[in-house]
Image (cartoon, rainbow, N blue to C red; front, side, top):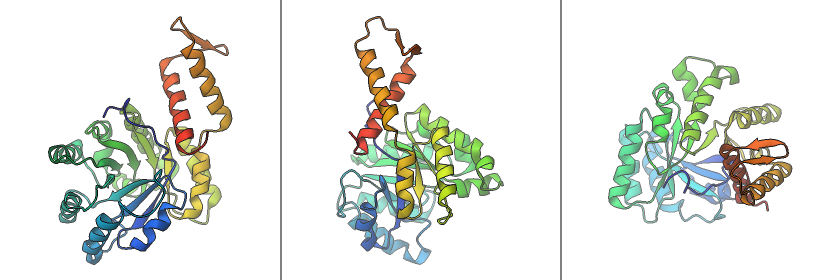
Amino acid sequence: MSSTERPIRARRSFIFAPGNRPDMFPKALVCGADIVCVDLEDAIAPGDKDDARQQAFARFPGAEGPARVERIIRVNCLRTADGMKDVQALLDAPAPVPAIMLPKVKGPEEVRNLGDLFDELGIETRLHVIIETNEALEAAVEIGRASDRIEALFFGGVDMAADLRCRSTWMALQYARSRVVHAAATSGLDAIDVPYLDLEDRDGMIEEATRAAELGFTGKGAIHPKQIPDLNTVFMPDEAAVARARRVLEAFASNRSGLLVFEGKLIEKPVLRSCARMIAVYEAAGRR
């Protein structure tokens, strides 16, 4: 599926739920996030991996919740034994798994090989990739192009800061964030920013989310449901911008010259694509 064929979804916010807590799956699905990701990696202790794996693949795909919420399972690094067990559990899952998230990726071949395996076996599972290693940052564009199954690139700021030997601040990580946005835009993917970890600093979270949106991110993670309304607001196109985007597309549709000047400004194809995307996100989020 090419980037022009890939449906545009609202991915303004996401939240994790631990794979060994199936009682939390339905609660997470109704908390307001656009994406719910059940975690088999960082949130799960080594001794609980097998149980979490079994619970996640057996119960999360069919858990009760709104159809509009995107469901993802974050597997363990594919270069580990637990990652290989996760892939086998996906292949043996009783119900189709909509999407998985790949952590600690270092290069495009990891993504490409998994996509090829899914192609061979007729598995329709989509992919989300976290850019959180120095190697992945260097190869971000190639990773984004590695498979047509990829839906979004996620920025893993905590691990990235450790790999880059820098502080986990906005300024220290701005270059890395920009590379992720660049790679995502190159392949028509969404770019999702790392969660803001200080739950009590609402103003700081909103400020960082606003900066991320200005930089080109399409959404941001949450560590608690109370952060989600603010994230959805920050990454939701406002009504005035959507109304203008609709007028631009209407003007282009009725334009016969191939050259559109709208409200005194020349409108070129990248602007038209941006307008179409803005409207699609607005509508996918339930606003008409």
